[in-house]
Image 1: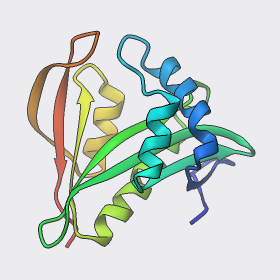
Image 2: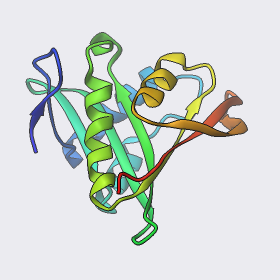
Image 3: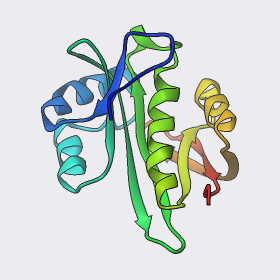
Length: 159
């Protein structure tokens, strides 16, 4: 499934267990005021069989994204568990490429997709809206320990 991210030398492929430490490092960098995922959490997600993608610039992992299915067909539902891109590699289409990769997986089952995004994360919200998501709810104090609010967003199935 390797594919280039737009306008970059970055390749999108499957996340591996050996990437877990780098994912946790990026989580701490990207989400310092909240409860970033640990290396163990990433390993558990992969062992559970959830689809996770990696963005690599050569051998360096610069982004990751994961999806979980919460209901199967005929009314399939999925959740975007996480998306993160190294700040040094942001604004290059990597997050969009990772998101589209996850949506392709969800679309194969005709799944409706949900996610949560911080209400103050304008860049992410704009990306999600451009990819067909709409705000359907508000979760007060969703992110801990910061207490930041989150919007719940939904994208209908492609079928």
